[in-house]
Image (cartoon, rainbow, N blue to C red; front, side, top):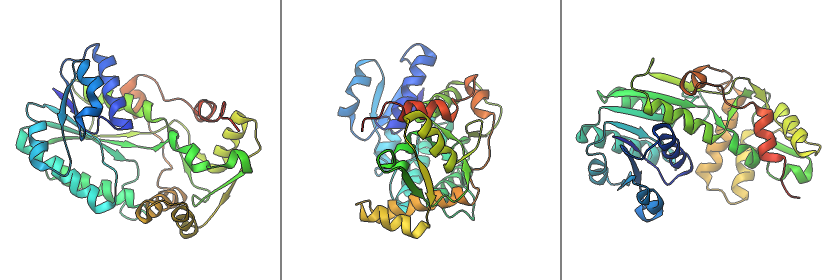
Length: 290
């Protein structure tokens, strides 16, 4: 049996859907969720829905009973909370006899990264390495889905600011990443232990602005800004301090080149590369209202 944690979340739910598509059936698929009521539609389709609160280790162990492969979707929240939650899940998986954990990690896990997200995933990868279980790391690049948030109201103002400097990254939609993760989970065997799920080309945010401008028909420009100023601006708009700092750190990691690499791992799992930025930008910005 394959269990996907966070199955009410945007990535987890998509992984479940892609597993159903890949298998042509709901048999052998389980969904770990905090709120089972929100997964009633999955239960109605024959998915085994199991309460799996990352803050309740005993509940996690019960949820993981009979599971062979665990797709551990990383949680959200402040750094130490996430690390502890992931550690709870790893311990519960060992207690339940799970044989294989596939973990949704981050492309940037560098020790010198300015990103708090990198620290979270680096710590969890270390915990997984010490677990004694079979582990597959699925290191995701930046979600293309976050580009509208990154651009903010740029379609109205004509400009946006990020602390990404001239750094480059690739961008892949959450749904496509879910497809690759599901493919890895469904595979009877995998060729390696670490997959870097990236796009096929690197782009800086000047190029992102150009792609969004082409899709929307609006003039756009990108203006780099300092990480501290960006975090302060986010906090001023109501984001929690930890999240404002984490997002600023992520873009600072882009500026530092921590996302400036591409891999063919996505195509190796799925059978084709992810969509290029121009296609994703058309979907995200091509029909946006004023």
